[in-house]
Length: 245
Ligand code: MN
Image (tube, rainbow, N blue to C red):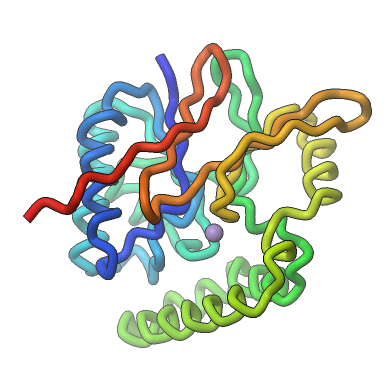
């Protein structure tokens, strides 16, 4: 058996081909896995579990069908979709994972994280993250009317896009010291994360011991999938078929 790990799909009605490919993935390849982990930014935005966006609801239904099929489903929040709650878990049959979480499968303990908390060179972003991850802030936000939340999410997204465009590309990647610290704190030798969209496997030495940092890619032009089995974790991409009419 094997588990699958994906992240950074950024599903949005503006790019329906991504949602379509993910639904095909859920109805096909994912059914052969014992578990699917989604490491954040599944959706470009999530304004609360009362979300009525039809494109997102179609994906929710496909996730529910997968978990109903007996595949364990684990979802971690990203920096775009950090407002999942019990309603999301019920609607999808998933279990929400706190960020970070150590998961042991196939004899390997892996630290799973979305990855934005590792990008400590981006100080303004880390301040924003601390604010929106505060449970009191989230409670106040979720108490607002849905239309207000949708407007605020749109504004936050444009703000984030202009911030990202202005930052030096190096600052948007993980900070090496933070990665070392996180490895030491977790006591594991494998770290798996997304967020940076820089798919790859990096080997580094910490305290004379080999450690591996694996980064899942995004789904902007093709699907990025990590396959975790008894042989380890490998990254693969699945080409995107043209959108069916
Ligand atoms: Mn992200």
